[in-house]
Amino acid sequence: MKDREFGVITFKSVNYAIKSESVFNGEDIQFRTIPTPREVTHSCGLAIKFDLKDTDLAKRIIEENQLAIEGMFKIIKNKEGSFAEKLN
Image (tube, rainbow, N blue to C red):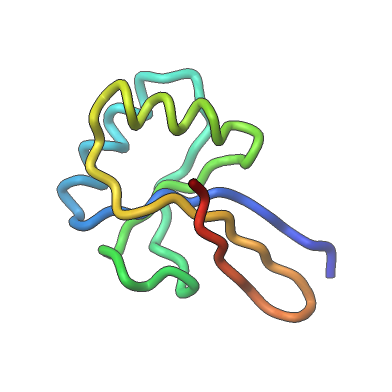
């Protein structure tokens, strides 16, 4: 199995996730709203998935729009399993 890596933004509530999705829709970034991965289950049920090459852009969008996020994570999936690493 080839390693897969992607970024995930998690939220404290579904309302924050929906608001953030609306903001991200107006930006030039590829993303998808997904169920929160099991590796970071301590947040609400929705998360935003994005390509790791867009991490700086995602951070800028969050800051400029003062979005209330729970955390930003790098998800790594490989033959050993799935892991989450917090991004600063």
